[in-house]
Length: 289
Length: 111
Figure 1 (cartoon, rainbow over the protein chains, first blue to last red):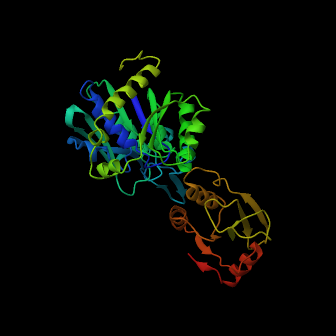
Figure 2: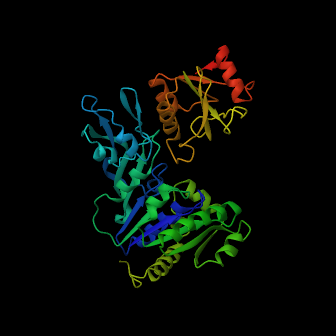
Figure 3: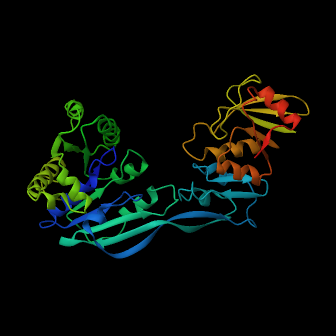
């Protein structure tokens, strides 16, 4: 069973929810928490996993052999991302725009292109308390594209788990789509403010396209203007949980504590949340699957 | 010799466009024959790599010099490698006609 925790607006509490859900489920289920926010991963700051394996995320960048290349320009035409340009006597490669699709290599009639892996980030696999597997990707500073790292992070070999939680990046970009497109359920964490609502609508736009069931968690309940609730009442998406605004939570998170360590009674609420999610996934019939 | 200028619209009275990669139009001007045409920029709506696509387009149109308000780093690299002269116009050039005049007088800024 794969559950993504996304938001739209940044800073709404995705990681807070993801790590506490993981900790609440861990006593009874094998939990795998994957931090897909590779530009600014933070689940490991709370779960403090022991990283047992760190590998490279790579993009295969084309290299053109100038002795074989006849400057026909087919590669430039084929590249959807304008990562290649033909100037006078050479083909220029812009590796930061290259998506590593391999299209140019396939299309070259002279077979003049070979591919070389360029490291664009790290994939870290770790074991945290209560046997939670905590994986997180880290994009190399100055790289422009998180999506190859996210796909490679999700594809890492792992022991089978009962529940995989994916902590998504903020926003409603390619990185978010890459994280959530193939999950069984999307939890959207928001706050009842105009920014929260605006970005929640964008995130729901993606969810409606991928077709996965989804539910909402309202964080910092007590602040804001109630418009999120009014908006959601017109949609099929249920509000599953509300976390009240509380200075103690902010203070605790600031020192790396889990929400369910700040307010332990919430463990029961997270188990309840999980039950509601399982019931909403058609193939699962109320059990992790 | 062909010079290409980024332009807001399709004629010589148009204001020159401050951007290169996503300019709506290019004015392609032959300095020897004074013949010219307006070309729509194919890179304008591209999600990424617009500077490279625009530079490729300009090179394919045989420009020896390009004039805009500014050039991004990728466009800059492509055009420099191709040996195309990069020039920028200032606030005094309010029309394509004036840009061409300034070019002939040698008063455009290099780079």
